[in-house]
Each structure stands twice: as C-alpha cells, then as structure tokens.
Length: 584
Image (cartoon, rainbow, N blue to C red; front, side, top):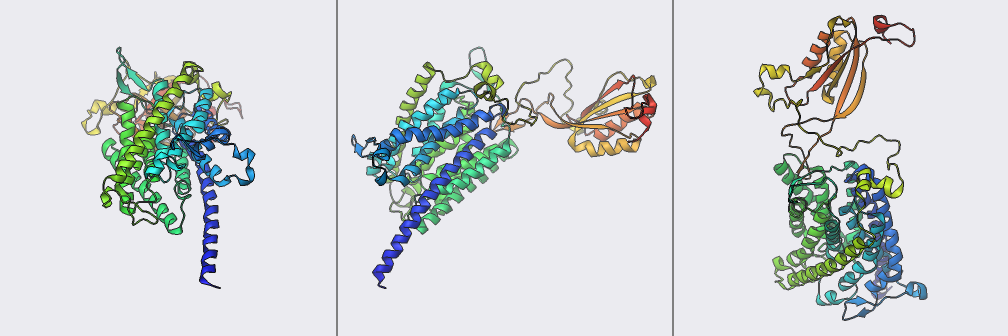
C-alpha cells in the first residue's frame, strides 16, 4: 500500500474522529446548563430555587426555537452589509439533506450559554415572562450578530481578531447583559441600606441556601468546559494543549482567590473560590489554543484577583445586586481573557500562528483584541439596554414586593417549595437589634471579670427549690453536647429530650463575612436539651450545666428553669416524682 493511500486513510479517519468529537463537545456544553442551574440555585435562596431551575431549562428550549427560525442564519448565513450580519435562512426546512447539522447543534448550545449567564445576576426578583422575552431576544438577535463578526466570517474575523471559544462572544456579552439588566431592575429588597438622600450606607449579605449544590454546579461546569474550549480542536496535539490550559488557569485562579480572601477577610471564602474557578475558565476560553503553561498561569492569577474585585465593585461602588457573581465572573474575566490573547499568544502552542506582545508579536494582535472588545461591548450595551427598557415599560421587569418577599416559586409557578418534604430555614430573613435586655458579654476570656464569668451562661426563670419538680431547658453549642450529656448523666439525670435547633443573637464584632460582606445575623446550629428533675436539686443541675458549657465567650448558651406542676407517665399512670423514677 502506497504512502499516499496511507496518508489519505489517516486523514479520513482523523476527520471522522474529530467530527465525532465536535458533537461530543457540543453535548458537554449542553450539560453545562445543569452546572449553571446548580450554581445559581445554590447561591440564592430556597424560596426561588424552582423558579431558577425553570429559567435555566427554558433558556435552552426557547433558545432552540428562535435559533432555528432566525439565530442560526444571522450567525452563519452568507455575509451581508460588509460582514456585519449573516443572511437569515430556513435551510433546515427547505434543504435538510444538505444542511450543516453539526454546526447548528454546536452553535446552538453556545447560544444558550450566553442567555443563561444573565439569569444569575437578575435572580430572585425578575418576572418569569420578562425573562422568557429577553432570553429569546438574546438567542435570536443579539448573540448571533456579534458572533457572526467573530466566527461567522464577519468583519472582525477578517481583520484577524481571535476568540477561540467565546471569552468575548459569549461570556463578556452575557456578563454585560447581566449587569445592564440587574442595574435597570434594581437590587433585591434589603440588599442595601440607604440614608434619607438615597446614598448606600451598608451592604447586606444574602448567603446562598445550598453551597453544596453550588459546588456541584461548579464541578459540572469545569467538566463541561473541556468540551466548551476543546470541541473545535483540529489535531490531537492542539486538543491536549487546550485541555492543559483549561486545567491550569482555573486551578491557579482558585488558589490565588483562596489566599487573597484568607488574608483580606480572615478566612478563605468558599463561594468566592467557586466563582474563581469559573473566572479562570472564562479567562482562558479565548486564548486556550494559543497560550503555553506560563501564559495560562498568569491568566489564572489575574482572574483569581479580578473576580474578587468584580464582586466588591458591584456591591460597594456601583451598588448593583448580582447574587451569583455573574458580572465579576463573566464580564470582567471575559474582557480579560480576550485581551490576554494579544499579550500571551505564542507560536509554541500547536497550530498557533500569532505571537502576542510578551512573545515578540508587538501591539498588532493586542490592538485587534481591544477593537473587538470595544465594538462588541458597544453592540451589547446598546441592544440590551433597549431590550430591557422596552420590557420594563411594557410587561415590566420586576415582580411586586409581595411576590419577592414570599418567593417566586409559589408566586410565579404555584410551587409551594422546591424541597417538598424537607424543613428549610431561610437564614437571611429578619434581623435583630440591640435592646434593653441585650448583654453582649466580653470579647476575650482573659479580659473578663469574675462577675462577667459568672454571668457567661445565663439562667432565666423563677427557681423555687421547694417546688419539687423543675423543667430545665439548656441552649448550648453543638460542640458541648457530649460533655453536657455525660455531666448530667453523672449527676443522676436519667432522661433528656434533645433537639437540634438554629439560633442567633446580638454579637458584638462577630466579623463573619460572605463574599466580602459582613453578615448581619449569623444563625448557628445549636442544641436544646430539656430535662425534668425532682429528687436532684435543681441548683446542682444549673451549676453542672454552667460549669460544662462555660468558655467565657459570647454564645456559651442559656439555661431556662420552669416550675413543673404535674408529670404523668403514660404507660403506668404514675404521677409526679413517681413518674420520674422509672428509667425507660
């Protein structure tokens, strides 16, 4: 068999293999919808989880409908208006036998991703109808036209602008759209405290109700991103290099974010680190095929810092309420990743033919990247501002105050709870204020006086030693439960009722932060122990409990004592002290 024939067979096999991988990559990108849904649901409150799942489902389904009719043609149709737009086509209906099925599916899943990004920043207060409308417009017009400039043979592609997998075309566009939408509709109720002049005086933290689900979504997205970045690879070496970059950048970004938040806030911020992983992925998306390991590391370092800055900027500077950090992750790092091509591109990467500024390529490619960023930002800002303004003036963007407070699950979808059968507590509802009964205790055990130590574990209730029977209710830290149980048992207490509860109180200088914002009310897991004593002196129970629970710090617990008038044992009918003697 001649060498020419072997080469032809090899080329044919390679083409077929990468054609199949192209579709597998599209399937991985589709699976990212689940990741976005989990991140958004986990980072927001339980009363809106069903609404968020519904929106992420409809992103893809509505996007598919409009992409069939108009979006695909605008993106990959024949050039018109000097590469500004593709000519709409209904070839999927009129010439199905020769239709480009692979490109349709591939570009559809990317289109749906752009619309999904917007959902997170506008979560918990957007009308479902309004969401469906702007999701359709993004998928039908806004994304396809600017994507045509970059991937459809449009004017930016002709100039040499490079965005391999969508830092600019998808993430920056989605992130900016999210910023515009969140700005126009305003913050969630209670997010910002304002003075009489409308100036923001305090930012409040709204912790996500399920950080575990949010983390699961992050891992799903990272997994899907190998298809997101790698699906369009044309050789095995290029695919391997893309996988390397897609691993290094988010990992470095996460480590940098962990260290930075640890130093700045005193503890490593879990949700911010999850955002940092996604930020690193967004930043490496445009340059993933043209950078080496060094470039990937630097891109990741900047992304890990930029995401923290972006969250802080939205909260404290422009006062835009972004529950999941979509603006910081996608807009800020979409811009950074696009510019990074002009800085770190190197011909050392497989199939790469350009060099960035730091690899001897001068300012040419960097100038093209900046041009692309500016023009796509301008297109998105104008079109999405018009879209959101029109929706707001017609059907309205935002739900009513009552609907927002009660939750979108029940009000928008008639869904009592996304977690039917589970007991959930929304720890962001309500707050507590210092009053005449407040005793903040001491900040440090070493500074406490003997009187303060004696009052650390408080006793409430009229204690009458001659009453005979008493109910003692002890609220304590979970960590002290075993010691308390053993101490009471050694004292002679033979039975107790134990309940795990959540509790909070006024805490001076607690300093706990969520995404850089100090928590107003920290609801912590506690244990409630209830015992009935008769023959044992109640003072001994109180003293034993105080001795066991005491640490000298705020939160040691409280003891409540009640006189008990009667006790009846159901099994035997015995009453009062006789009812307490039997051990069951």
